[in-house]
Image (tube, rainbow, N blue to C red):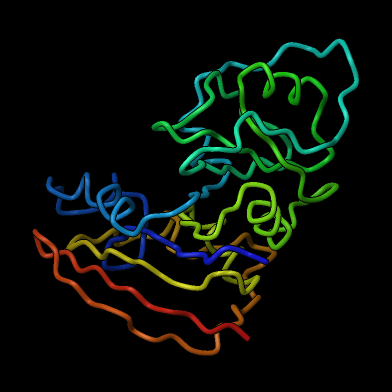
Amino acid sequence: MKPHVICHMVTSVDGRILGRRWRPKASGFGGVFERLHDEIGCDAWLVGRVTGAEFARGQGYPPADRRLPRENHFARRDAPAYGVVLDAHGKIAWGRSDIGGDPIVTVLTRAVSDAHLAGLQADGVSYVFAGDDALDLAETLALLNRELGVRRLLLEGGGIVNGAFLRAGLVDELSLVICPMVDGAKGAPCLFDSTEAEAGVAAPVRAMQLLSCQPLDGGAVWLRYSLENE
């Protein structure tokens, strides 16, 4: 069984997600993402490695002095919500155990080093394995539901991760805030993006239904859609 997955994002009117490039520069939208995140509510939120690394405080982990089993490890199982980060090859040294009070859960492949696993344990970070060399997103969701009771998950980027979940048919709902700003040039990630290798892969979305449309302060609009996947 998988959680209900809601992709929750804020974009410019041209669908870009790198806010520092948006014009005109304006204040007033800085807290809208977090406010609506709390309003929607979830048992966990999930981001990719690049987004997750923005929260890291560590500078790397020392070599391990022992072999560690490739078994799921949980520092906590009783949290109201978890911060889940995809880190297939174990590149993030956390130096912390939570983000905003939400315990960190990293999703790894079995190819990660013993040093990384030892470092995660020392930091008090939970981890699960969802693949040998590449992450299995469906298995990731099943693990979170089975091991931590996650029933409702907010997928919050970046664009490559959002796109991977979309193309895998794993997104159930879209929560999209469109701000009255534009990017206007290529080079910034989109709401749903891909690598070059996946550029020709279409998302298996059969239908989308508008659930709500709400104007926000400053001219932004909050749209919510349900997705029907093939």
